[in-house]
Image 1 (cartoon, rainbow, N blue to C red):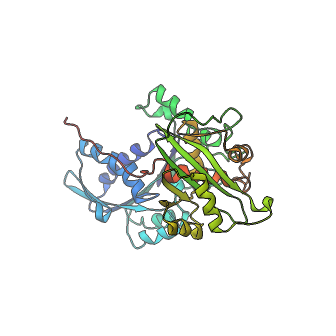
Image 2 (cartoon, rainbow, N blue to C red; image 1 turned 60 degrees about the vertical axis):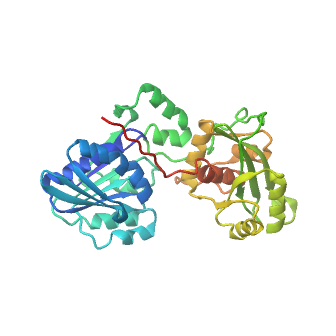
Image 3 (cartoon, rainbow, N blue to C red; image 1 turned 90 degrees about the vertical axis):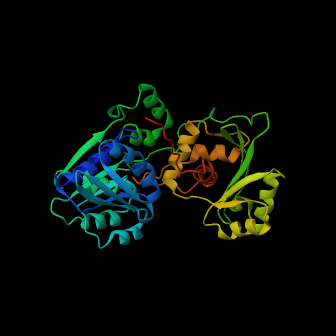
Length: 389
């Protein structure tokens, strides 16, 4: 075979199985060769692949020298040495990073999150006799280029296709599998739990029905934050969040629709509304729609709040928001009428791609900004502990 493709459910063992196998395979027929290990970003690649893989390789007798500043791992085994370069394929410009290299093989971790141009440029670098392509991913929508070009054509591409289930991971207990199944719903459940390439259809948050909203809890909140989706012609939606213990509650909101009101507000008028929403509370941080440069500048100029431009990957943000809602990490209080209304109206557009209808989405966007940017704002970091053996 020229390639191997592993897809399927989350936490099914794809990444660690492929990581060990890719390194072991590289030492059968190659010596003093260069290989590539690719992820969505260098940070995610180090966190998801390199960090868990290094101690396992050491136990198997491989000697690993990680040159972090060069994004390079030099590995020795039984007198042989090979080099493994790390690459991030987050956007179309990433293809330039890998040009000019000669590779004996490449491993793509979460290939469905990478642009086609980057993947194909990396494949073109594999010109050494005996080189092979290694792919793993969680499913996306069925019209995704990787699904069409590699999974559906695996026989003509001379690729071995393996499908993973959660039950294939011996480290997961039935209780853990049950917990993962509770984390997702709708198309995300079909993709991440059942491992299917399905289109997103119907309501984006089908579980947010009557009864899913709560009263504002009694007691003192430990921390406050605000999320903002800014609009002049389109509605502006700001949410006030309070943390009590490990749960963030959306306790109050500001929603202004210029079309229905018959007039538009200036940046300063929206800032005044922000001050009224926060009502003298000590706000730890505010996240704002990253395209609202003028409003972000107004907030900075006044100097009352620490403002953070929001992360704006729509599909990833929706997935994280759905998980946070299902796990009870965030709760929407019944004082937020516009959020409750939009949860009932927010729909996928039915195009076959992961695109929600651009209507009734302004509170939905500011909630997504809160989850993606402020909830667990240390995303991407990791903790290392050592234990004597």
